[in-house]
Length: 124
View 1: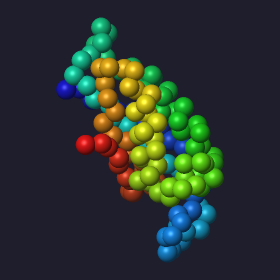
View 2: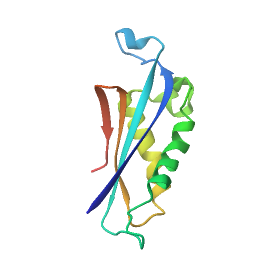
View 3: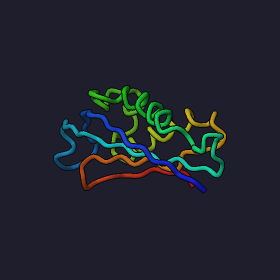
View 4: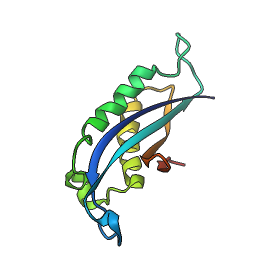
């Protein structure tokens, strides 16, 4: 089994509805997003998937989040924009983008809201 990992990031603001504390107020983060894809078969060049292709797919999703108020994005009007929910949102969007590539699947997405706090989403 092979796995590849890429990272990117975005900056955005959010407020956590129902949270009793400072994070209930509007505030921002410079999020780092890391994804891992895995598979058994390499292509004819010896790659599972080109890093550039994987990072481009991730960046297309992050562009829609970058410098936004996340609570105003349709998905997050009903779903609290926590790091956990951001990881699932990004995973779901990326999973759709990668399904056409039969030789690899998305294993997980990790969203770091600070250098020492992160949430990971994966499907069993």
